[in-house]
Structures are given as structure tokens and as C-alpha cells.
Length: 601
Image (tube, rainbow, N blue to C red; front, side, top):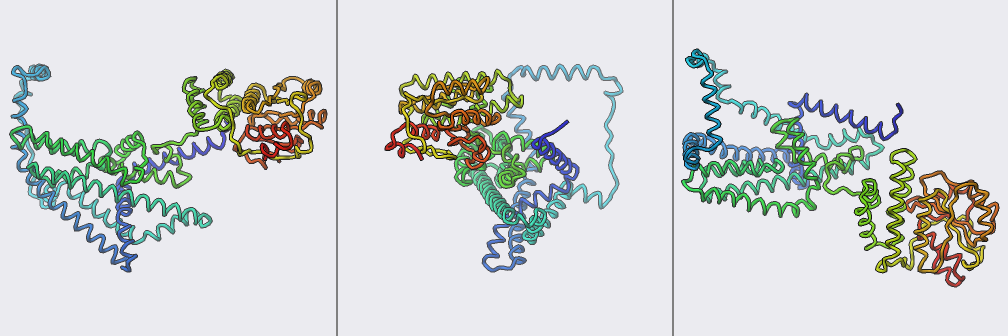
């Protein structure tokens, strides 16, 4: 089985991506502290760079930043830990109060759900044997072991402390060696691309540092306002709830709801009424609305991350690394998106995660017609006509898709009936444009033409199109004939019209018909999808060498010099790439010499 280059690149990217994900899953205990350390390094690097810019040595600047960071983290954990311990003492009391309030809200006879649960529990109890009912649970008590006692007292804090120590140690080394890490990346990429690599690393570092710093400040401010608001309401442990609000807000979408649920539950247990619960809800809702309004202004044009992409990324990081992955999902996803926009090899990440996907009008129109969305396709063209001329809409949207459709049919990507539908839709649209008096077909006075003159047209004197008709030959069939019809519509204000012929059948017959007509100009229409009709052009030039010949290679985005080199054996007078340049060439042949300079290049 043969694969093209794009398929091979896709398969290689999928294999490499799968291996990377597998390695991150297997070595999660290694990658978790590294990922957190890298993010903290991006967050703290601007502060150390600022100190170094002021003349402080790197060793001292890193030490000052780390000491200050440790003091802040230690102080917050001390206050939050004290309030957490105080809350733990009152949990049994809060539990009784919550149960009492919930009991008071139940219906007198109990809810339907409670009745169903009672029936299930009674059925389960009745099926137990006498031995199972008489069984007494046994509790195993271990002996006095100092290490075991310490492990029991420390509990999860033992692993948390070890994890935090590894992260801080990695941050210190990353801050010290950040220049060396950049040199190593350049060495891996190659010194031949040092300019591009250096600029890309600088953009990624500056963008991520700015975003992470702003995100941390916003979430810290959010938690501070929530803590002060809960303190004003009178809720116990306000610093704890403010800390959790700031921490949970790193979780996309659901973080604010999680942070609200805990103080809401405590307000139900601590206060006798329900007013404080509504105050807590109003506080969270008001602060969240304000922050959501301020964030786009702080982030510039926001993070540019698609909500669906962020949600899927959050699910992926949670599956990969659990709770820490969920907490870091927002920052890690932004890192991936920035890398995708800055590194060519990772461009697919930027496409998958970006909020605004840039799709050209011609591709959007192609999607509509392939989906048989006739109204949507016509709407795109009508909207384009409001801001662009008829020639520009044809050159930028319709003609490229006619060529693409012929190419896709040749490769069997689409069927012949799809191309026939596109032709019919274009004909209907052209009929509507011709009948709509509100749509003007006047073209710009000074169009930007795209053409290449092979042999000057000025050697032929202007002729009257009434005596010597101008002929347009559709070299490839229906698509080329539609382009010639568009050209006729663009020529309508000037009074010049092309006589359209098809090149089907024997080229000798085509030349005989042309000789009978005695044309004043011949324009050969050719969409770039098919093979170039060099043989037809040579026969026409051999038979009617004194008649100016223009070759319409309809691709306004092509390089004119390359097209001339490719078609040079065709020996035409001029090669045009757009309707505007074709109209100018025809006007040059039809107009008097005094007006020719105004319409041609």
C-alpha cells in the first residue's frame, strides 16, 4: 500500500504522540513534579530577571525569590492549616445541624425515594442468616511502633512534603540553569536555525510567563475577595475558603462551583436561618461575573483557547495525572496552545485548541456545497458581494472552488454528481446576480490585474467586436464555460461580449469554426486542475497566428512568472490569472488607442 507524504507525516505524528502519552502515564511520578516545576519557573522567572537587570547576582536573585515564595506559601499554609484544624473539631456539630435542617424540610410521610430505600434495606435485612446478624466486627490494634505512629500522624502530609520539596528543588535548578536549557534546546534543533529557535523560545517564554502571572494574580485576588466577603458575612474559617476558592479556580469551568459548595454547606450548618446561604451565593456570583469581565482585558485577547478544547484537555490531564492534572489542566493547555502556535511541527495543537479557527471563504463555501447546503452557500456569496466587487468574489471564492472540485473529482475524492451540483449552483447564483438590479457589476476603476505579457498585444490594432467577435474557448468543459460567463458579466458595463465555445471533440473542427468566425481576439479558459491544453493552443496559433491569443490560467494566487515558464510552449500573447486582468486585456483590444491606456496595465 502506497502512502502520500501527508499520510506518512500524520502517522508519524500519531505514533510519536502515542509514545509520549504512554511515557507520561508510566512515568507519572517523574513528570508530575517536573511539569509543576516548569510552570512555577515560568511564573517566577520574570521576578528573578528583574532583579538581575537591577544588578543583583543570579544566585542572590534566585535565593531572594525562593525565600520570599517559601515565606508566602508557609504563611498561607500556617493560617489555612490552623483554620482547617479548627473546622475539623466542629465537624460533628455541623453534621448534626445539617441533618436537623434537612429533616425539618422533609415531608411528613417521607419522600418517595426514602420509602423505596427503606423497602430495599428491609428486604436485604430479611435475607440475612442468623449467623450474619449475630456477627460482631473485630478491630485489630497494632503494637507501639514509633515509625508506624509517625506515619499515622503525618498521613498524606508525608508524601505532600516530599513532593513539594522535589518541586522547589527543581524550580531552583531551573531558575539557575534557564540559559543553559535554552542553549541545549538550540543544540538539539541545530545551530542553523538559531534565529528562528531563539525567537520562538523567547515568544513562548514571555507569553507563558505573562499568562501564568496574570492567572495567578487573578485567582489570588478572587480568593482574597471571597475570603474577606465570607469574613464579613460571619462564616467561620474564611481564610480556608478563600484559599480553596483561589486554588479551585485553576480548574476549568467547575472550579468556582466546587469552591462555592463548601462554604455554602458550612453556612447551612453554622447559621440558624437561610439568609447567609443566599449571601454566600450572591458573593460568589458577583465576584465571578466581575472577574469574567476583567479577564479578557487583562489577558489581552483572552487565552484564545476553545472551550471544548479546554474541557477535553481537562479530562485528558485528569485521566493522565489525577487530581494534580485537573488542577494544572488550564495552565498546561495554554502551554500546549502557545507551543502549537509558535512551533511549526506542533501546529496541529494550535488548530485543535484555538478558539478562532481561520477558514477562508472559498473553503467555507466548498464545505457548504459538498453538504448540499444551497442556501448557506448562496448566503456566503451574497454576503461577500456586500464588501467586494463581483470580480473579486469570483476570483477569490467561486473560481478556486471550481478548480478544486475538478481536481478532487480527478483524484476520486468526490463524485461527478458533486461537481454537477456545484456547476448548477453557480449557474443559479449567476442568474440571480444578473437579474438583481441592486447588485452592480461595475468593477473598480483601477483594478489590480495579475497578468504576464508574453508577446505585446499592442502589435495588433484595436478592432470592432461587432465585425470581429471576441471568442472565449472553454478548454476543459463546464467549469471553464462558467468562468467565461462570469467574464461576460464583468464585461457587460463596457458593452463587449465574448462568444463562448467549447473545445470538445477534434481540435481541427475548433480551428475551422474559429476561421469561419474571423475573431478579433481569442481567450482560452483553463482551470488549473486539469492538464494544460498546449496542443489546442498550438493548433489555434498555427491556423490563426495573426489573431491575438490570451490564455486564462484562472489562479489569482499563482506566481505569474512560474505560470509563463510552464506555458511558454503555448506561444500566446498574454497569460491572465484573474477576471480583472482578462477584462483589461479585452478592453485593450476593443477600445480605441486613446482609451486603451486607461483600461490596461
